[in-house]
Image 1: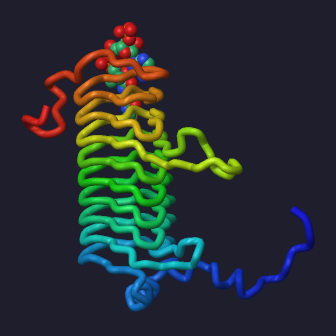
Image 2: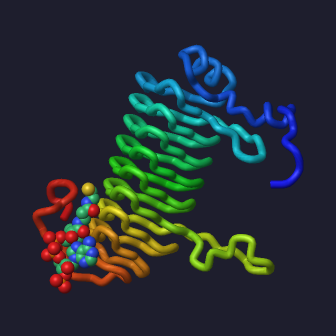
Image 3: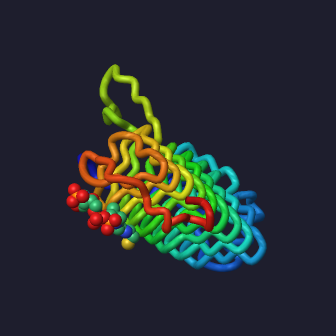
Length: 232
Ligand SMILES: CC(C)(COP(=O)(O)OP(=O)(O)OC[C@H]1O[C@@H](n2cnc3c(N)ncnc32)[C@H](O)[C@@H]1OP(=O)(O)O)[C@@H](O)C(=O)NCCC(=O)NCCS
């Protein structure tokens, strides 16, 4: 870093969160400012930033549905929507315009990037990272430390190159074991089972077990592991 440190400036102040909740009054202030719609019986712990602005300073309303539990350290960016009964663990970051459905859980220290669609009854476990544009359908299970990706050639700041971001799709009721990595645009099929540590470079068919790096298909998911009675 070059140059001398500058004293606190108006710019610094503009970037202060202002939507950081420490007391019930702070919550009321965020609702009054139009930054937050809070459902009945939702709980927001102290130390949650309920409508963090985008880089351009935009703050579109955040929706925290009825019965949600948002734990301390969570940062919800502008335009995030959490459905009824959904929970976040501690130190979760959900970036702008991402939507999470009903009765889902985003585990401790998970990072959920922008414009992601997460369905109902989804479990995203501790320290998972979902890249922007990922689609996670209902009842999917994303194990601890999983990573989804959206930029195959990593063209960020490559002169003249056109970056093409495409998120993976995790279909209804699929399961990703701990530390699995899913490449851009790949679809993990309905009720498919991906092993711990797998690198999913190609689509996994419905109800198929996939293991290894690169992933290989080792057979069907057993019939006695349906997500819901009769779903398998
Ligand atoms: C995929 C999984 C469910 C398979 O379990 P299983 O049905 O008991 O299968 P097996 O142990 O008989 O393994 C079947 C084959 O897959 C291979 N395999 C299993 N898990 C693997 C893994 N994580 N990575 C690479 N290969 C794996 C086995 O070596 C075996 O290969 P082979 O037939 O060539 O010998 C299990 O190994 C797994 O990875 N579970 C994920 C656990 C997890 O991360 N939970 C998250 C919440 S804590």
